Amino acid sequence: MRLNAKSIFSILVIAIGLIFYIFWSITYNIWFDIGIYSVTIIFVASGVFGLLISQTKEKE
Image 1: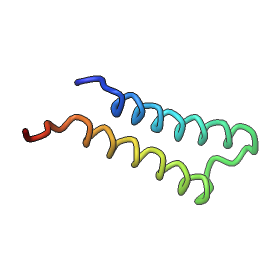
Image 2: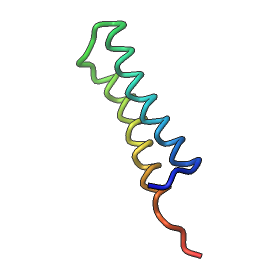
Image 3: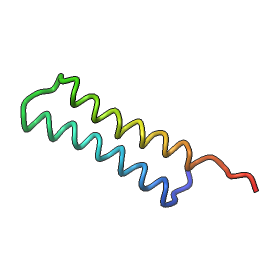
Image 4: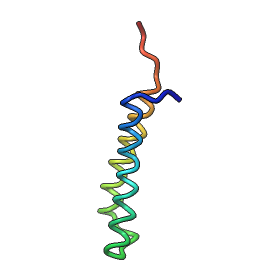
């Protein structure tokens, strides 16, 4: 796995999504909420997609 700026940013986006879900759930004691899932999945999916894009080799 190559670590570049895009990879690091993608990992941070995934971490932000997971931290947001855990923080919100602990704060409001709501572990099963479609709204929180919606926000979390946007962060996590964007991070995973960014990791996939950053790991592909560019054609020269």
